[in-house]
Length: 433
Ligand SMILES: Cc1cc2nc3c(=O)[nH]c(=O)nc-3n(C[C@H](O)[C@H](O)[C@H](O)COP(=O)(O)OP(=O)(O)OC[C@H]3O[C@@H](n4cnc5c(N)ncnc54)[C@H](O)[C@@H]3O)c2cc1C
View (spheres, rainbow, N blue to C red):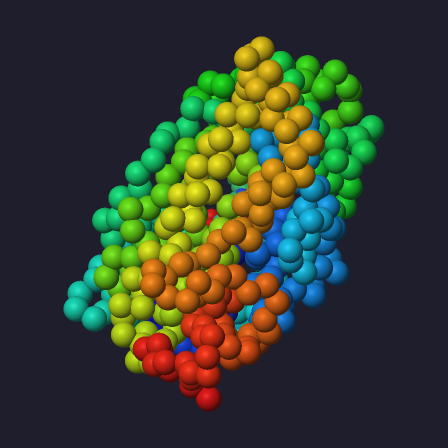
């Protein structure tokens, strides 16, 4: 079977890349090993920059109308939450919105634009040869000019392409239980103390997520979490009996932190968790991946359709890798704060929490970093506006926009700017009518 681009993985990132490619008219097949979408929401929220980029394509409304706006968010479970309302964005909050609903909306968008999603197709091999790439699934071979590996942290595509995944192994494990409770706490409930860490999120349908860090249960071999253990952990850390019952998902996860050595090898590109993994502190991983998709989609479409040289794709890795490394760094720092249960760590936490409370600008710096509002792609020697973020452009068709004396790229960053009357230069990419 032949197509222009094969995307491996129908997670949120693969689906958004597919939608972006279809917007430009590129033929796309998405291969997904699961027969049915994953019913459990991993991520629970969307941050400001992701919402800005969805809004650029006219996609924000169903998220905003179906989600809950959270005005203060946590950094490393510090007692003092970050004030998100001071951020310079049309979306000064974190939007609580479960990942499986994000995936359903993005799948709808990709299908509506004409993407083909093949479920029950587990990719086993990827071989590049000349200007083609062969992708094998159980019993079938597919061929395309380009392959995007959006197949998660254990990525088969990344391994087949021989791209390294350097970083650190997990040394900290968190518990997670999506359960019901006889006596649920109020929204926003959470704590970190000398016994561990706990945060509770309210999910649709009366479901509650109890998640955090238990220093007494750090045996990496013990992957199973039982209701009994969850109840004991939660009660020991909080001192409260919530009457936990009816679990829908019980799991543990670690803090392995890695960034792929490159996001491109020839005709293979990586996006989302296949390119970076880290502790889900601050709830940023899904957002980082969706922002990869926005950076990659228009570039890959232009190269596939012969409207740009394939060197444009090198800018994808050059632009996105440093921001993945930035997330790896701050999630490691947050892990240190979450696991700081001894007196030294508690003192450090109290000090930092006090600073966040008394220095609003420090709160703002951390809020902008979590929300990816700081992401920019500087171009040495260019006008200082080049590479800076545009918060509220309407780029519905995925094409650039002239706004005053700037030209804005399809993913919402300034591409060219002038002080004078000059017209935009040839940027090496043309856009079809
Ligand atoms: C407990 C937990 C909580 C989290 N909370 C947050 C949060 O609050 N906010 C946030 O932003 N992020 C959070 N994250 C991170 C977020 O869930 C991930 O970053 C996100 O799922 C990445 O999306 P993805 O599409 O790159 O990969 P995935 O969601 O992993 O999707 C990959 C897809 O590829 C498929 N696949 C894998 N291998 C193959 C193969 N060989 N062939 C075909 N298909 C394949 C898989 O079945 C899957 O559907 C959390 C993660 C965890 C574990």
